[in-house]
Length: 369
Image 1: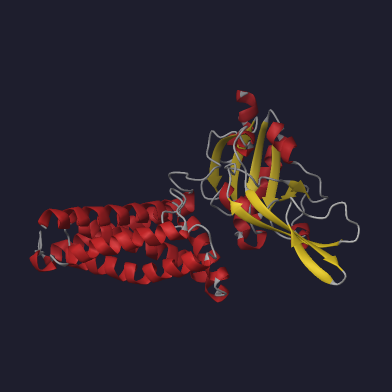
Image 2: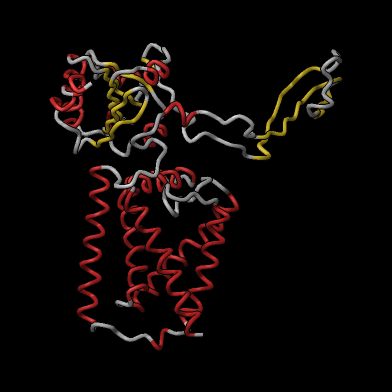
């Protein structure tokens, strides 16, 4: 039984540590997931808590796992795991039944699980926790209560700083499709022979006031006495979806610039601000300054945003403002504003507003080329 408890302890601790670390690497991604859940459950008034909750959750998961693995304040770690599982196991079961958001986000963007898979994972963890709990009376302090608490507090502070650093300067590991070195066009291709989504389509026709459902094999295509009313398609089998499937950039006049940007052989800088109103005015001003410098030095510069036309026009300054889907922009770079340097459609480098190089750095690119 002792060996089983040790294995249970190791498994639970590693799962919680991993879950906490991948969320801390991308705290903004976890905040977006909280936002999605708040929207799905009509709790939009909690949106401002998305980021604090993201950092709180990843810290709680990591510290609970750290406590279990190291043995420092192990009973407190067991309590932390218990509280988290009591909250999230019923929640994931409800999510599995209703599926308001397809990916739970429990492992960030490092590993994607369905809601049912997440619920199953939690059931396994609950079972292991029960095994672990049977041995709590045998747990003893390793370094003394005060020393262990100091270690836990210091570890917590370091972990929060790590999370905040990833928030400010972009994730230290990029789990998203738009990584440095990626040729965007290549990630938009569906390989030959790979099946796509399969749908069951129902055609609704009406005759003599009576509506009837037909499928693709028996609908009355050649019978003019039937009048078409409606068509419904239901996804029955999910097929392959390219890693990048929603990269569409349009100018304010509606012109599609996607291929122009991806096929350009020189350097292009994409300034990405999902919402202009949510970006700091100083950061925007610095971005516009960089844009003017790039344009004057022969480097294409595009400002990508999902803000409405009226809002964009209030910022018009001679630079190329373009429209893109908000979710796409969030996926491209975890910053507002953030920057992507492209050459031949390949992502050369990414920055947040906090560590983007000075304009002169970009001026040297054409000289190096």
